[in-house]
Image (cartoon, rainbow over all chains, first blue to last red; front, side, top):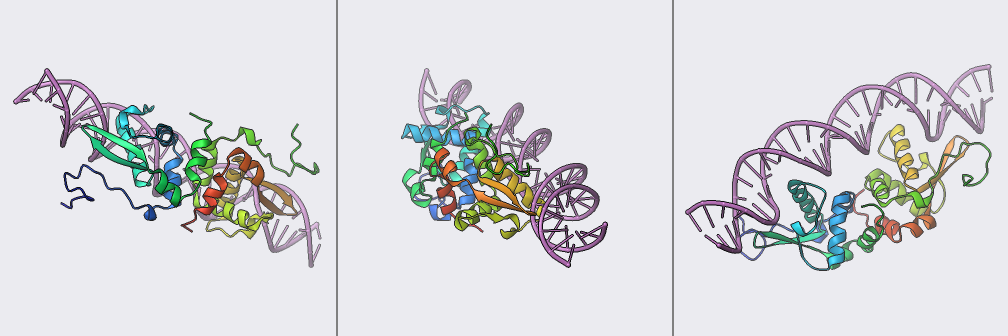
Length: 113
Length: 113
DNA sequence: CGCAAGGTTCGACCACTGTCAAACTTCGAT
DNA sequence: ATCGAAGTTTGACAGTGGTCGAACCTTGCG
């Protein structure tokens, strides 16, 4: 059913929310978790797509999946498949336009982890 | 040390943490709550001390007390008594120095409540 | 084909946190 | 000295969300 967004191939491309539908509440809920902030920080530093496995996290795979899901729903990352790997990238510009200064402030303010 | 900001009269001045002891985690946990963000936003706009009662919140008094406590512990506000009223003010400059851009980004990104 | 690598889904569990009512404290005014 | 206004403290409760293991699904490859 329903040919997700676009390409038409398989719906192996998960649904990404429009940035205008993202609320500050949702974003802060996403960023309050240290594991998720770590993901964001790594993507911020990497400046390129990273597979889930590339970012090593102190949690199980299923938990990691959960975190990536939350970040995607909050408009922070974009995901797509490359083989069996799921690639992740920050939605920098879009996010910056929607919440100016926020990403930087959060990524910069590192002190734990 | 430290001399809790000011008068020295009674210790009706609650303990305020040193800004250097505040972590990003703590700050985000404080700012993720809509009621607390509302408090911060009002203080941000007011630019002067406000008593707890002045800021009307959709919660009971005891809950309000809790929220102010969290904000104080997170280094976001400074409190002192004036009669039976407890006055609150943002720790603007200090906070800005410790977490540049964060306060503005959060207060600016209003969309809910 | 069959198998391993990389992720996902599904329940279940547990800790944390926001919430309130009730009783209490402190100060100012009557 | 008494009363009310403004907050605080305490205890209980409920919802949420991060966590895991186990079973499952895709894709790439030999």
